[in-house]
Image (cartoon, rainbow, N blue to C red; front, top):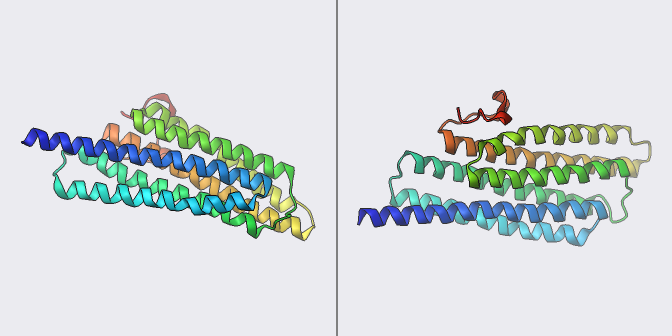
Length: 233
């Protein structure tokens, strides 16, 4: 009876992990649409992103309640408890990523249906979108495979995202005297900030990978040589 109970517990935990990581697939879909909507000033596509955020919110609630229910029914051993804690943190990061995608989409109609555009800023945002997309997918694979090397490499990827975020802000300051263009530029600064935050949440998921593997929680900025296989030491 005890063996069967533990087997059911681990099966439920496995399904909840799959649901959590599946939420990152929903984030990637929302991110792709949000960046495309920015590039083409596509208000209808932006509205789809906003509406679809309910799916990510629903995933968060489903997993969160499922994990709490597991804890109420079982007394997990150390490694299982570590995974439950990591999944609670990870699914919250997933929900925040969805919110950031929705925030980007909400900025598009505010910036005007025929908003002025600056190619340099749009190119930088497109590049940020690709990098953030890669970070989200890598955070997913790092957790699924318990791969601390992939987790550590996210810090390197995040450096370019942060650099582009700063470059977009500088460009907005220097963009010129046209008030409509300057206003649009400020909206793009907010878009870049939201993309940067999605990347930060991917980093937090990667940190949870390290926690599950090693049992120690350490923030990546505090770790030297994180991309060189030293995360689990």
